[in-house]
Length: 525
Length: 46
Image 1 (cartoon, rainbow over the protein chains, first blue to last red):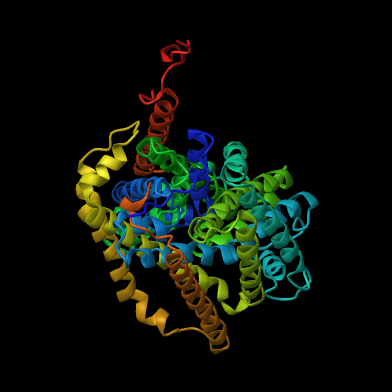
Image 2: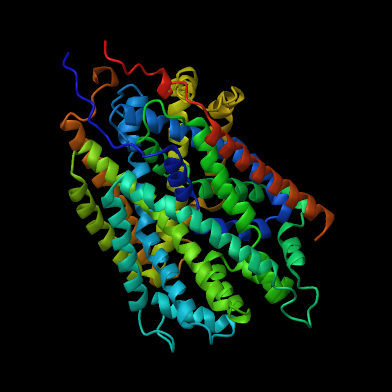
């Protein structure tokens, strides 16, 4: 039997580098915008009970699994899900095709994420230039955002051209870091961005805490009453299944598990590098940004300026509304608001770029590892595809293409992919071998109780999320119930793009197989 | 903020900050048995 050579792959420059890269991948716009909205609208402080349980039983175990199989795959010359699933399943023919979903998810997200990332960059400049400083009420600030996005033409903008320019800039910067590689690009970016994000978060927190009473005629609108609006527990909500689902969904979303990015990053570890402590450290860093910073800035600030009723409306208005409508209005009313606005949007931009590079890398790793394309070829081809599809999203934004892409790529694919990887790890790779692999070079001994969790609890919880979704919304979503007729064509076009992409990815896996890239692990040397 | 709010707030902050301190302390103080300290490496040629 002839043995195949394992190709030389890049490695992270330092342990802290990979931890910061995974943390940067996880810390995104959702930490500052989605979490506070979810907590405030699902029982306040009581939300933290299902949230921490989901962190313990879903987030931490799935992250350990992803780090472990990623490093294992990297040792065998595979960094992306098709190759990693192939080796952890001992070369079974079907395994590699399951990995395609872990490539589709991040790509689908990427197609609109770069555009949104561009908004944060543009708004950072708007803050300094005073572009939105004269806008005084929510209605006009919403119009400012809609005009900027190109959803409507109004007194503020006559097309999405500023947003487009910001997208183009962000696009080039992202692919530049990817082109530079794992160590010189992604690691360096995160080593600079994460500390700046901590400083930005601290500046915002201190500024909001020291605002005093912004409206003297409303002396009850203080910071601590704002914190109370966010944290006062309503334990009766714990009997509502949707609160538990929201908490599980938030943990899933925030830790970036099931996206395939953690696995890809871990594949660039050395064989003896720790995964147990590094994974937990990356998770804890993400939770610091989410609970400590995310839970203490936007909702209390909204309460201080708009009162309980206004803050309630803000919480119900969604994440984009909070970030791009409510927060600019707040900055307009505070002294030094232009600078604080700049700090806020810089924080969002850095949170965005550290996440978006992690959405690009899985496909790049797949092209490099399985098709043996050079970095230049991979960046050029993927960049072209990304550019074309993002243009479709930009010009059909008002027709719901972004929401549709987000639903399938950002909400559905990660849950299904996490279920696949946990089942493959616990039931095909096996927990005995799994723990041996987790313990290799470990700086932390993972409690064996997690063997039971990974084998039974995590897959059951993931299945419950999927079943609950299907029962509550499945038929309505699939049949486009409630979608206005003028949006139907765009939504089907978006679905067609995703299905076509899935077909292309399956085809590329077949090409890689025919080129002999998926040899059995025992045939490697 | 109500007493319940303060309790949930303080418990959440304590858990997260405790976890962050635990993890980073272990990261910066971890010993790697597979790495040899310089004095253990025999550099003298026979």
